[in-house]
Length: 124
Image (cartoon, rainbow, N blue to C red; front, side, top):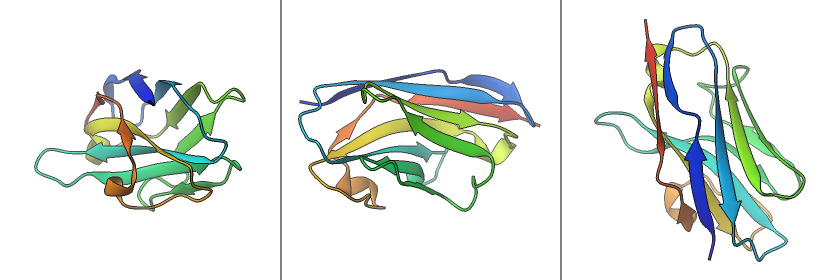
């Protein structure tokens, strides 16, 4: 069973940077998709960035050019480097995994494993 634990959230002023990490365990599939999602107050959970087992990445339009998703070679850690943060980036950020697939779905419901989330707050 895949287990995911996020860290690295916090409070920062607009224009600042944060790096989120997701420590994973229990991977049993060669093909997978890992992703970061976020949910702001009163909003639905939305995709931020994904990376598949081939290293292909996708980003939400709102974060392109500012955020970078990456993973280590051993697949133990997923990271999200967030630069030029904006107040609208304020949300709880979740790490998620979808195992046994070689492409990345876009819907949160297609991801079977989730971390507990880490809060990111950006002040103006």
